[in-house]
Image (cartoon, rainbow, N blue to C red):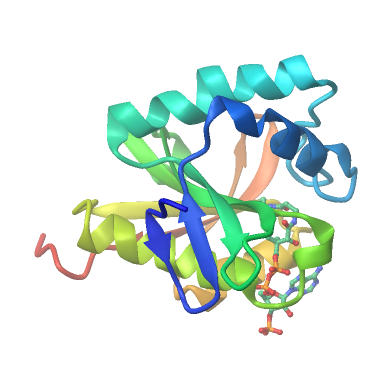
Length: 179
Ligand SMILES: CC(C)(COP(=O)(O)OP(=O)(O)OC[C@H]1O[C@@H](n2cnc3c(N)ncnc32)[C@H](O)[C@@H]1OP(=O)(O)O)[C@@H](O)C(=O)NCCC(=O)NCCS
């Protein structure tokens, strides 16, 4: 497998259009999309998400949401990664913000995988891509996600409404760039 990021237990790789069944399967579980509000209702929609949202980010920004596999058996467990989007609220008032995100199959929860993958994505963003700042957001009730952001040493900025939903917003500043 051609991985972009390797951690102790995980491999992160680029998604391809062939991964539509994996994205579809992941979003099929209502518990997985409980706080993300974007269930994918069929394979065509999964293909569209890959083609129009996930894959274009790789060429545009050199990063994106990456497929996550467990290293020892190469099982797909979800995605984690960075996404460039227009800055909003505590993310900033102009330009783009880089958002950290993650979504795992339920069977992979509770093993520290999200934290391991998220931490590696932040490190990659700072060390390899020279990004100045990474933002993380989660709904206040999404305790697991908030815990991941905290365990990645992200700094809490405050609560705000983003796209009509309450969000807790966190940031990490690149320690290698002197402002
Ligand atoms: C959020 C999510 C990625 C967490 O994945 P995970 O692999 O279970 O996370 P980790 O194992 O790295 O756990 C990180 C911490 O969060 C805690 N945690 C995880 N889920 C939790 C929950 N539901 N309630 C309370 N704490 C939780 C863990 O105990 C751990 O903290 P600890 O080390 O202090 O015990 C996973 O639940 C998921 O994919 N959810 C659906 C998609 C989603 O909501 N994504 C985030 C959108 S903002």
